[in-house]
Length: 213
Picture 1 (cartoon, one colour):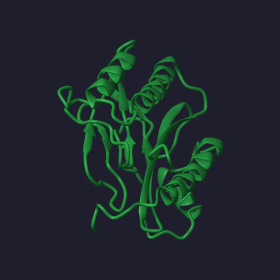
Picture 2 (tube, rainbow, N blue to C red):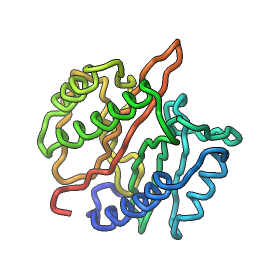
Picture 3 (tube, rainbow, N blue to C red):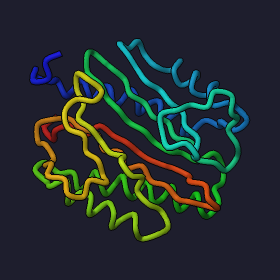
Picture 4 (cartoon, rainbow, N blue to C red):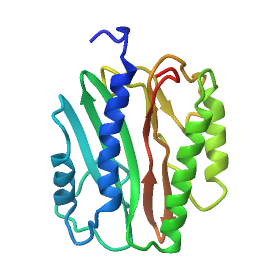
């Protein structure tokens, strides 16, 4: 595929909205007592006809991109839905972490920090902005509490390919990248907190489209 072909960003927005409908389901349904595989399969059933997709439903103790098939979802844990869909030739990629019932103090802090980190990265990722400034703002937001940014996580260019163009790694503090003004890319700060030697993870991801879309 030629990456410099014109991209219809309106079609990518349609892909984003397909994923939004999956988010609505995972946020509002009660998944406790069901296996991760069963819930993921139900989510896949909600998809329209697509050229390709990747769907993962991830527990709080796995960083990302792996669904433990037979594991049962429990009360009071965090689960993350990570979705990429190829719609009319173009990819969209998003993720969200949700709670299954009441959370303890540690998990509430993790979820709130992940939400704040995501909002900060989206806000700071303005066209023409230095990616180094995005990293600085992210670390300032996360370092307020006990959570940290997972090393080597980051966003990526997206379009005709799921990973297309630049990789935006949040641990590369000396990055010389600049946020593009005419390309689509993702933001995906993965946040973790360590409790009694165990790391718990939460993250949100979105596909950012040019402002003219």
